[in-house]
Length: 376
Image 1 (cartoon, rainbow, N blue to C red):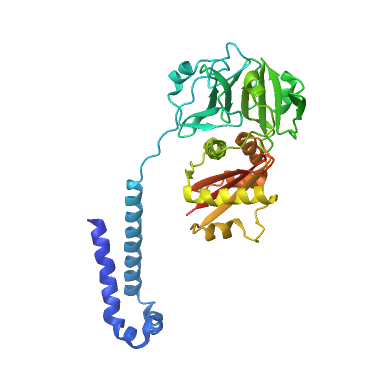
Image 2: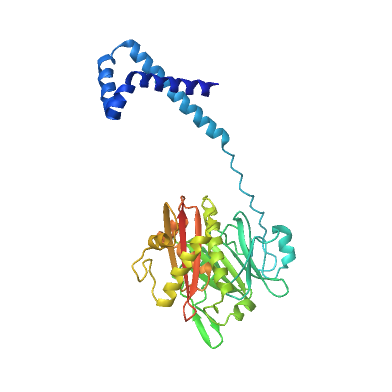
């Protein structure tokens, strides 16, 4: 009833204005009406009755706006509480566990606690990452061998347990004080692959596993992620770069998408939707860079990311692009982007709604990654 009253009042006001000024509007349009009203108001604005009427009109308008605002609030759905973090226990057989899972655990036992994976995608080791999360909360990935035993683990959330007291908030300095000097290289057959971490991550050989601990340089070099690969799985990978395949391309793309959403959840941001039409734009740019041996947001034809989106009929209000090249996996690409301020800002930008990722390999099996962010 109050809302109906307010609407009637506004209609009466409009009718009154038309009664007095309709002829002026027909003769001289809006400008003439405006001048006529201003003249009339200047002549009578000091009259007490006029002031009272204007105050009443203002109160009615404000009441009407307030009613609309309250109705909007009433229609908003209450936000759902975040899923609870699982109680973490100390590892039983290894130095580290993730989501209470350790290398060598049975898949069936793990999935009794997590349920089925949300996604399965090929990784650089030739096996699949199984991705577990609840709308990207409690996010981690696990890989299994032919006997369905855990052979790889990764998380970029606070799901780490350690017998050495290393936690998600440990600094690089404290990690090194406990674990000692990290590896400088990993031997692959007759060659040594050098580890060039630039203090963004360290790799250790512990419990016959290769444990890589990543640090966030923008948060005091604290632990931000961990990957654990069994010695057997690491030894199956005989080169730094994996053998390209369509399955691997798709796997790296979806992994980078999932990693981005998991870190956004860490920072209290919304989850991005996958943008399939935009994926082709991202893939085309990665392929162009790989085939023509360059690395730039501007392609050889002088087109920016926004030009390429427009050419592909992608409609957007805001958009952004992240590029990476040379990292052997989506994990290393993502962690590197998070330590680069401009790329980090895109990943953690509040206003973005969707994301697409395109990956392509050059003739030396070197991967190129393109992330395109977008708000419609």
